[in-house]
Image 1 (cartoon, rainbow, N blue to C red):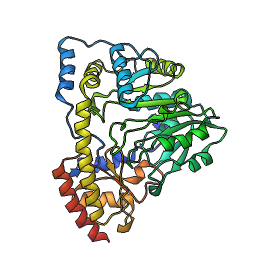
Image 2: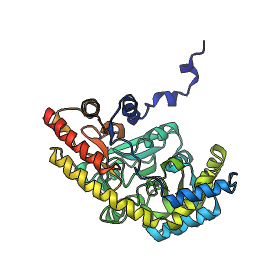
Image 3: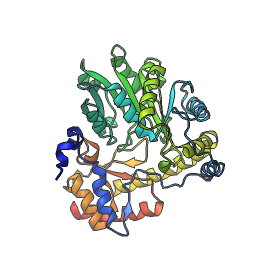
Length: 389
């Protein structure tokens, strides 16, 4: 009999599964549940984008592409980044097309982090940063951001966290799950602390198109940080293309060259059909982005007002498509709140503890859901909160 505990990687065994999956497993066994848990657009990929993917299949375009991604797609990404965010990247050597934004994050961490290197991670944030750091042999340095600060990484927190071992700073903004953003002046304050170090910045900007009231500002927009910043983005959120599994990472040519080598051995190339669809998205999808963002903003304001009316305090999110209400007034832990809300009212949300330190006392609610579902959820939330207050 093989003892699999002895043959598996100790690093991998020591990492806990994603806390999000716990609630999805419960959800799969229930019927008539309203889900505010899945971080996925409820829109279908716009037809003109799907049609281009279908056309590529009809024409038999099913072979491998360049390791870095189709040149035509990289050119469109370059044009898009300049048009939408005033960022310049050479399609020849500064852009790598990946299998979703998540692969870009993984590549960057593996390429930069060696055993013993420290990686600063603002929390609560996306679930993959810490485990990927651990698998690379790095040491996660978790910074607990606060609602009163807009869940921003403050210069005081960063200064305290930096040591001679610091190798990488992850910037998860706009933030999943909090909806927090970083503005130009916020990045300028951090830049003063980074300029005389060798720290690289990994900026996860998958929600860059989903900001409300102001445009997204990247750390790479600062000339001081541009040479040390890797920007990750993708098609899943802005174009409702989650299942197409396509993203990209951009940055200094020497870094992208090494990431491409790692991508070459691990993946070969991103999905060909998805790349053809993505070219169409970048060429003709600006209007789609605007339509979806306006609708998310309407839902954001509606759900925020409803959650507050139900008696929960909640930071106003400025980006992404999540609310992160404080549920401590119910006397329940985050896990208890989500489990009971799901079982008693059949509404799925995600415990804040799934997103790391600072998440206890909060739950994540995704407003990428229909207005009917949001309305029904708020009626059930009002009833649920009254029961426990």
